[in-house]
Structures are given as structure tokens and as C-alpha cells.
Image (cartoon, rainbow, N blue to C red; front, side, top):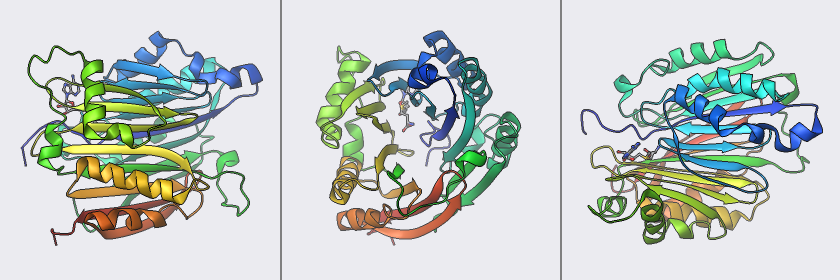
Length: 345
Ligand SMILES: C[S@+](CC[C@H](N)C(=O)[O-])C[C@H]1O[C@@H](n2cnc3c(N)ncnc32)[C@H](O)[C@@H]1O
């Protein structure tokens, strides 16, 4: 393990808003101009490198991961030494100017590989929560912070949620649609596969064209062939992509350097999706990276999706080592599962 390198593990923030004006509600946060978004990203210390949008949302590839802007929801995921939580107050203020009020917040992350390199307020989970709680309005009074452990000290899932009275989830059997979020973190990637995320010196390409080539050559393009992909390859190595498919996003980020290699995959779906599609998607993700260790966090108001995860992954040589679940107001159930290559006992 290198003493210090690029921190692949992302910090992820999801904020939900509500507003009474139906016009604002249609476009909502998407009305934020680019300068305002960049001002938020300046506070976090990252920039936009590529963008794409459709009728439902806008997706930005950042110098450190991704940003998704829906009318009443924003998701920011950043890695490295970014200060993600510094975006909270400016986002709440900009949303307020558009007539939108925050109603829930979810912050998640794995274990940093290089925790000592993290700046304030990311120096510890305790520090993060103190900072975050101070930035949220008191209306978000249902709050919970937990570190979900695993059998590996290197993998734990940090979760904080906060919501107001209207968002407290009570899982109902007849809910019309139950969305889930799946966050996958992979370390110790197969070295041969990781090499595909290095660019050839003087390849004559820009980040977009080199990114497209990596999407095709690695099999990432086959994970969801129906998605529009916005991809970017860093120089000399590293890769990020956002996929947009109707109102759903997926995103992949790769740090391929030996010693601290890392890749993440995240997607959203519905518990009513074809269960076999979820299984096939998980299999393809594993085959692109063949990691030695992997964690899968599933957040959902119902308990169903996580049961497919081990079924999909174990036949590919990754054995489930731990599975833990916890309930969070507004988010529902978070299930955190870890896997390691079966050869590593
Ligand atoms: C931003 S990308 C993907 C981010 C993702 N969260 C991850 O690390 O898995 C990070 C990879 O790109 C490389 N990289 C090269 N130039 C970079 C830059 N200007 N900003 C951020 N990362 C860069 C890093 O060394 C690392 O391998």
C-alpha cells in the first residue's frame, strides 16, 4: 500500500427539496445557472469537466466524480480531498432563492484509504456530522448517524440522514413505486483490467474521446446499453462516466493506480424492475473490474433488492463476508454487504 495516493472513496450527498410553485417545481434546481453551480463546486474544490441532460435531469462529470441535478433533488459525489459538505449551505441558499425548501438530507461514504489526508470537515465522521448538523435547518429534526461495520476494518459504511416530519418513511406494502439506490465500492482491482484505464502517452485524444474509447474497450458500455453515456478519461489515468436512462442515472469512477486502485459504481432503480436485470448488471460490473474486495450498499424503503446481490456476485468468485442492515428516517433500510475474492480467506 502506498503511503499516500489519490483517494478514490467518494463522499456522497443527496438533498431533497419541496416548493409550492408548480412552475418552479417543474424545473426547480435545474434553473440554477452554471455560475451558481460552479460557485458551489468552488467551495467543494472541484470543477465540471463534462455535462449532459435530458427532460428529467442534468448530469455533470466533475474533476472529482459527479453531480446530478433534478428539479427537487440534487446528488453530489466527490472523491480525493474535496470538501463536499461545504456545498450544503450554498445549495440550501440557492434553492431558497428559487422557492424551494430542504426536506431531507442523506450523506454516505465508505472508509477512506488515506484518512489523514482529508481536510476539514472530513477529518473524521464525528467532525463531518457536527459540521453537517450545524448547516441543516432545525426543521430536519429526524436525524441519525451510524457507522455500519463489516468483518474487514478497511470497509465500513458511514450513513447520516436527516428529514422533516413529511419525509419520515413508513414502508407500506402498497406503495406505488419503491426506488432504491445501490452504491458499490471496489478495491484492489485486477491489474490487467485496471491498465485499461491508463491512456497511452501522446495518444492525440482529448478527455472525451479517450473516455469514449475506455467505455467501449472495458465493457462499461455494455452494463446498460440503453443509457446515454457521458464519459471522461483523465491524463495519465483515471476515468469517470455518468449514464442517463430516462429519469435514472448511473455513474462509474475509476482510480486505476496500483497500490490504491479503486472503482465505484452507483445506480438507481425500482424494486419492481426485472430482478434478473439487476443480477445481470451486477455481474457485468464485477467483470469489468474483478476487484479483490467489494462493498454493496443498498438503500431502499423495502427490503427486497439486497437479497439479489450475493446471488449475482458469488458465482463470480467473490464471497459474501458480512451483511448488516439498519433503518433510517426518510431513507428507509440501508443494507451493507461486503465481499472478498474467494481465494482470500
Ligand atoms: C477523478 S477520477 C475518478 C474519481 C473516482 N471517485 C475514483 O477515484 O474512483 C480519479 C482518477 O483520475 C486521476 N486523475 C488524473 N488527473 C486528475 C485530475 N486532474 N483530477 C482528478 N483526478 C485525476 C487520479 O489519479 C485517479 O486515478
